[in-house]
Amino acid sequence: MSERLADPLAAIEPRPHWTVDQLPWGELESSRIASDETMFFLLASASFVETMADLYTENLLEHYAGDQEVMSWLSDHWQPEELQHGVALKRYVQTVWPDFDWELAYRGFFAEYARLCNAEQLEVTRTQELVARCMVETGTSSYYTMLRDVCEEPLLKRIAHNIRNDEIGHYKYFYRYFKQYAEREDVSRWAIVQALWTRIREIDAEDGLIAYKHAFQVRHPDIPFDSSHYEQFRKTLNTITRAHFPFEMAVRMTLKPLDLPPPVERWSVPLVVSGARYFLKH
Ligand SMILES: [Fe+2]
Ligand SMILES: [Fe+2]
Image (spheres, rainbow, N blue to C red):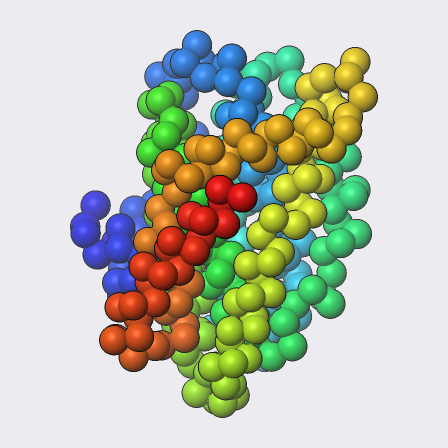
């Protein structure tokens, strides 16, 4: 793969197409991951959230009604790719943990989460919503980069790598559309900061807990769920994140829509990176 494709801040380039069926499922080494509870919850949760892309797409399509370019990209590229991430992760979870009833857990997750996911969650202006989408794709690209780097099971490494590149591609398209709208709508830098901040605050919000809870209830039907299980999981995850999260990449992607002058960016990136690390320690 070219350097530019892997670089989230480089221009858009066509990505190699991959399919779930073409992945080498026969090479999966279950014994290297099956006993890892953290990985189980991480992957089950990710598979639920990716599979939910259907719901977001409807909301987004409404928000960009009349803009043929954005609407076609969302429905012809973005949505099928997000759904494919869900299919790949679901199949992976079902193969490694065959006793886990994925459909049952997903139904529970869907019923609870769908109520929270409505058009009111979208930002007011199209520009601000595109900034928020850049932020979401920054989160997913960084998350899958980390997953690729920490996991030891070779097929998962490959899946995480493929998904990561797709998410970076999504970021680039949302960023392109953001630039187009920023010129038309004349949105201030402050409004952009607000949209970014709203999304940053939401990162740790409900979807993580809801996904974990439904995966937990199906995996351990004999143990009543309480929030301390989730807190323990978050603690373990924070330890992994501190050591392996691609902070610098994430910060650069987050700040890009602000279009800061280069000297400001030079000092702000290390500052925000250390701020994010500090935040995770506490
Ligand atoms: Fe995705
Ligand atoms: Fe994405």
